[in-house]
Length: 118
Image (cartoon, rainbow, N blue to C red; front, side):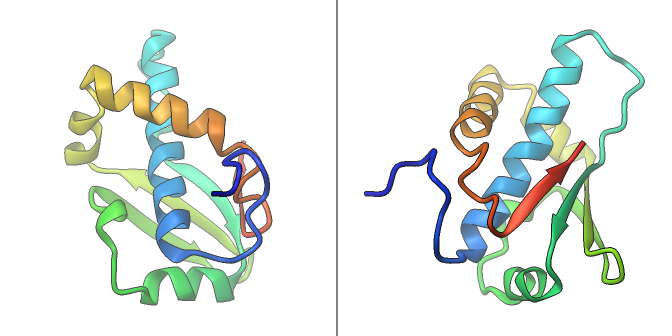
């Protein structure tokens, strides 16, 4: 099994979907834990059109449940906005911990295909 902290070589739509999910959750958790009440809940990612289209065409879309996605082809920016269902799911301590663990493990893993924009 490949080291989760090393860059992934082959594109995997479902793993990229999970990355989007956990990075969006991590953004929520970090801001809530810091006591921020007025923060941007939408998270932006840079992803090439080809990868975005492969991800959206993939038969499994479950990791994206509770996220509203919008994609700008010109800038290749994907915006993931959490819906109420999503934010409620990450009120659970276990889910919050999972989001943090995934964030830490995947800082560089998917960097060949997608980057979070701060």
